Length: 258
Ligand SMILES: Nc1ncnc2c1ncn2[C@@H]1O[C@H](COP(=O)(O)OP(=O)(O)OP(=O)(O)O)[C@@H](O)[C@H]1O
Image (cartoon, rainbow, N blue to C red; front, side):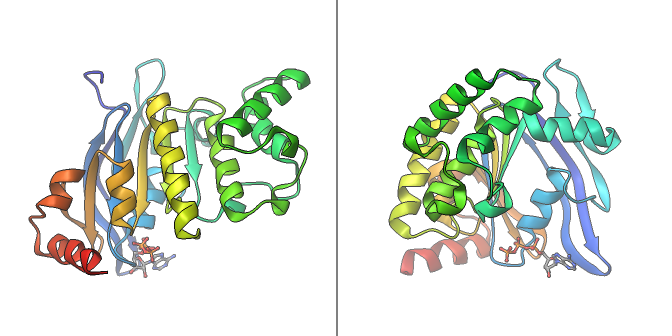
């Protein structure tokens, strides 16, 4: 890890009228670090993720990102074009529902190749070869490259969405319940795959999940949210093995009883 964080979040709040979405959230994310944001439904996880990934404008607070040239930039002071470029290249966003992150009516190969083209790649043969290689890395057979994702199973779609995001070699991934809608056995396999890819690529990631098992498997550090605020934060194993906040204790014990 380098001596400087990749991403810094300072006092981010989002209010929907009088209702709190999230309030006064601050943390640093380091290169290669995976942070899980956990909490029950309505605790503000998605609101926070959207504020961090510039999909939603926070009511207040500052979010900065260390660009490849080493300069820290305030995300909300960038131009829309700069932000969009970041999102298409240096960042990835994995949605719970793959259909939200894929183009369902173009081929799997084109779904992956599109991000390369956004980077200026124009060589068709090379794009296709890279796309096919990436399908292999997410365990989709190369002969499915011309199939549309609507012909894929849920697990395959999710793996395709992951390939589409990783093909540009991003440094930061946002993930919103990445295994949410899948069968338990498919979830386990996908989590293993994700964990391997994140490790191999040295990716930093912010993963929103209500599933503590997902947090345990993927993350180094955790933030526990309740009613829009952080109630506990720490190394994942410490938080899960020795929760300090009463709310986290409840969350952990309720899962263990299932
Ligand atoms: N567009 C919106 N307008 C008004 N209130 C909203 C909006 N989006 C979210 N909220 C409110 O903000 C709070 C946090 O919601 P959020 O969706 O961020 O929680 P969450 O932890 O992601 O929940 P879930 O796991 O169910 O997706 C809730 O009280 C919710 O009702």
